[in-house]
Every structure is written in structure tokens, then in C-alpha cells.
Image (cartoon, rainbow, N blue to C red; front, side, top):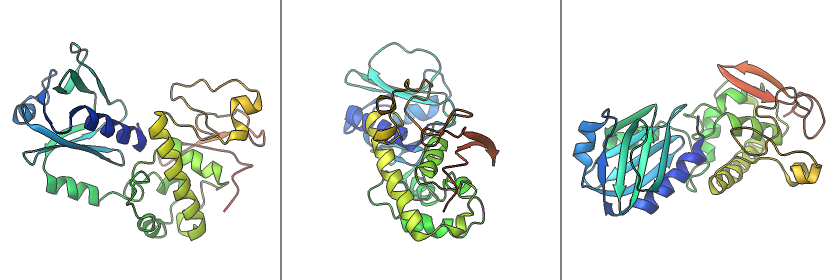
Length: 268
């Protein structure tokens, strides 16, 4: 599932291509056809991302709420013929945005948008986000920290990759009970997520290794994975830890794959 940096990058692309312009809206696949008719010809005012949610706002107090889910994808490109099952197409001035395979795509309004956002935790990519709000929720949970970090009502936008990597980078045992996390540790985790996710948004990929552990610094081959990016533990099961050489472990935790190094991650 795309993590929050993907949605923020997409929101910027939509703004750059369409904000302030009347747009043609259609549903080539047909599953959003009635809603598209209501939007066709309206001005797209803004696109905004909050966590893993995308909101595309129009001048008639209508909002398209999109959640990409596991297989969804939205691309902004020069105008071209429709290819595949396009749920939603937005077009203007030689550019099109095509949405395929989303988990959710529905027409709503600003009050509903605000209510959905209110249920989410703070987003590390939001400069106005309050990390203390996430810490208050985290401290009320006895669940493992690794589980709570994926709870979007606690922290918006963080997915399995950033979860695994930020815990490794700070040497934290992923099974540490969330309510035992100190304010100092939470501050370090939050600040690191802010930096890592901003870099992910800028590059369009997730890189989490420090300069000493890049392929060039270590004389090792680059990572080959369809997720891209250089990482410490994510999807590196049984491969040697880049820091200590211990094989990386994997287990199921609350229905998600967890990756960690049992040697480097023994704290707080």
C-alpha cells in the first residue's frame, strides 16, 4: 500500500496540473460516471493529502475522496488515450490524471472531509502537525509500538516500510509496549519520520540508510526490489544486517509483516 509521501507527491502533481482551471471529468470504466457528470466542467481548486488519503476539491463544495489501497494508482501525464480500467479521469490543458484500481473513490463534501481528517493522527508531512497528539494516543496503548505506528488514528501516513525502518534506525525493539515509550524517544522517532518522509516525497522512493551504509560506502550491490530504495530491514529477511551482520528476521504482527534486527533492536 502506498505510504503517505506518495499521496503528498500526487497532490502536488494534481495542483500543478489542474488547480485553478476548469477540468473535464469522466469515468471511462463507468463506476464513477454519475459523480463525474456532477464535476465535469467545474474548477478544481486544490488537491490535498492527509496521511494515506487524497482529497480533490472543486469550486462547487464537492470533494473527491480517494484511498488507493493495495493496488490503486493515480498518474498525471500528457494527454493520451484511455488505457485499462480508469475509474476517474481529470483532464485540462493537455494533461490527464487517471485513477485505476483504488480501494475507495467517492464524492463527498467539505464537512465530511473535515470529519475524516479529524479521525486521523498527525501527519509527519504536515508542517502544522502536533506530534504531541500522537504521543498522547500512543501512551494510552498497551499494544506493541510497531503495531501502534501503523494505526492511522495515531499517526497518519506511516506504512510498513517507514515503520520498520524508523524503529531500526533508533535501535528500538518493535515489541516494546507503546505506553512505555519515553517523550525523548518519541521526539526522535517523529523528527526522523519527518525527515525520511520528506525525502521520500522529494525523490519518489524510500531511502533510509545512512551515508556509511550505502552501496557505494560498503562496496555492496544496490538493493534490487520492486519497492526500490536502500533500506536496513524491510523485505530483507535472512539477509545480513548492514550494521552488525545478524540475519534480519520476519514475523507476522497484527496481520502485517514485521522486519527487524534482533541484535541492533534491543531498546528502548
